[in-house]
Amino acid sequence: MAQKRWSDLPVNQRRAISVVGAVEAALTAAALRDLARRPSPQVRGPKAVWALALFVQPVGPLAYFAAGRR
Image (cartoon, rainbow, N blue to C red; front, side, top):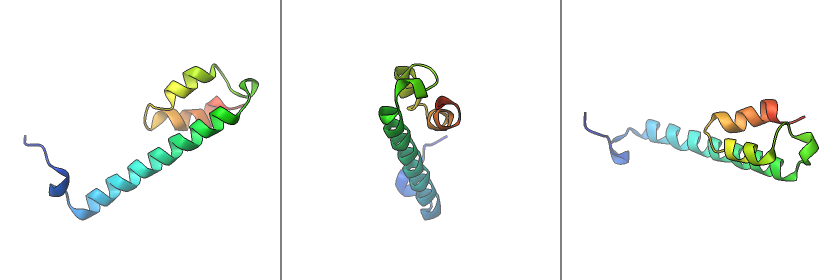
């Protein structure tokens, strides 16, 4: 199966990929900022582990906001 290039994708598909990528980047940035500013006692588990987990897309930032904060 031949791989498609970016230019081969329909405009709607390129737009959707761009929007999803931007949302993931914004969510990760917000989670990193919150983690950096939040005191350690207000975080469930080690902050270093959460920092690494935030880069597992898209599960990491969602898990941090759902379960990582006290």
